[in-house]
Each structure stands twice: as structure tokens, then as C-alpha cells.
Length: 349
Image: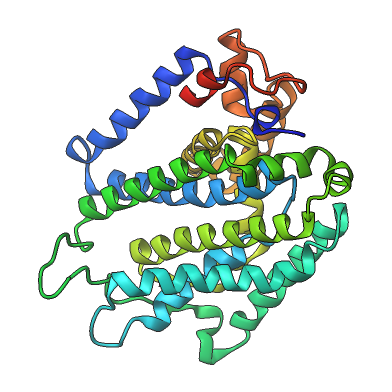
């Protein structure tokens, strides 16, 4: 049976050390930067959570979804609807409700879409997402095309005691950092569980897994639901940070951007999803800020430069940024026949 080793690279020690230094830099960043850049890195971490949720589907289970942004946006709308007009909502119950709401939507939609395969799965996920998009876009009761404002950040009080204040940009930064690390640790452990190994087997050969007695429909539906719930966590954090939600967050473009993040970092490696999200968001700022040369505004055509960069990267580094780093570090991908070899080494990565 396939294992997650088939889906992930053994990161060389140098890459592991670089990722560790990156984590230390993230921990120290708010003390060395302005509020603007603190907010920018917070947004990158939110998108990293979103990218990891999609990587569970795309990189681990082999299900490419073009409608994953629907669950991201639904959680943001849930926060907007749950927040009263004149006071903040409690974090401790609104967060679980928003995440579970996105997971429930993924469960209902997934019940239909995971019955399909290949290109049909991709098209059906996009069709459901577009239906959700137009439901909110065309309905004034749900905010319409203008979206909704979230005037208050959630309240963290517990029986009158306030452990932290999300109105502080620095506090929100560390709250998001903690959420990103928890999601990463959870998904890494999930890969080594029997459930995670079954998902990897489905990605490699679903027919063989079914012949071995695995109920592949249930496994795929569970992965689809979990991925939707984690996307909802990212959407909830997005709503907290921006204070604004609109239907564009559910659109095809948002889903496509997340796929690019996963591909940029390297599919099947959740550290790669984080790196890909940071890389994509950073390049987004760089390309949008390109100067005007003569009568041509280079920044206006940022999609062109982003597309060229991704094409070049996939051409010369098909396993993404972490795959390129591993190759430069003279590491090798895990063999398809490895079962229990190098387990301790991979756990360290």
C-alpha cells in the first residue's frame, strides 16, 4: 500500500535549518518591523493555512479542486453574520461555528463531487463554487456584490478576563502564527496515521485500494470535508484581519491562486505549501509595484509576469521551491518501494 513517503521529499538538513531560521524570523518579525509589514506577513500566514488545506486534497489525495475558495469565503461571511451591529462576537464560539459551517458545506458538496473522477471532478467542484459565488453576489440580503463589513474583531473575554486583544496587530499576528503552526503539526501527524496512508494510497492507485477493501469514497469525502473546514479557518482569520468580506473571495480566481501557491512550494509537502503561499504573496507585491516604462505600466500587467515566473519554475523545478532546494542539497525523492526506511529522518523534516 502507498504511504505518504511516496508523496513527500526528504528535506536535506540544510533546508530544514533554513525553515527553522525562517520560523525564528517570523517569531521576531513584529518587533523589528512596521504595522504595514506586520499586516502583510499576517496575510501571508493566513494564505499559508489556506494553501495547506488545499494541499491535503491536491498533493496528498490527488483531488484537484477549482472551487476550494467557496469554503474560505463562507467562513468569512459566517463571521460577518455572527457579529452583532454594535458589539464584537465571542471568538470562542464564533470560530468553531464558522469552521464547522465550512466543513458542513464541504461535506454536502463533497457527497456529490467525490463520486466523480479526473476532469469531471475538477469541473464539478468549480460548478458548485460558482453557484455559491452567485448566491452571494446576486443576493442583497447576503451583501450582494458589495460584500459585508466586519466592524469589530472578535472578543476573547472568558468570564470577564481578556487573555489577549485581537485589535492589536501584533497580537493578531501571533494568533495567526500559532494557528498556522497548529495546522501544520496536525496535518503532518495526519499523514502518518492510517487515514493519511490510505489517502496517499488513493492518490497512487484508487482501484487497488478499493480492491484491498478500503472504502475510498468515505476516505475522500472525509479529506474533502477536513480540507473545507481548514479553509474555513483561514477565511475566518481573513475576515478578522481585513474587516471586509465580498463574493470575490469565493471566486475561481481565488481558487486558482491557491493552486499556484501549492504548485510553487511543492505538492504533497505542507512546508512547501507554506513556502509557496509566502512566495506567491511576495511576488504579487513585487510585480504590482513594477514601475512604468515609457507608456507601459509594468505593474498593471502583473498577471503576465506571475504567469511567466510560474511557467519557468515548473519547467526547471517541477517539484516547486522546496523540491528545487532539495535537489540543490543533493537529496533524493522517496522511492515508491520504500515502506519503513528513513522514517526517523523524514519525521525530522
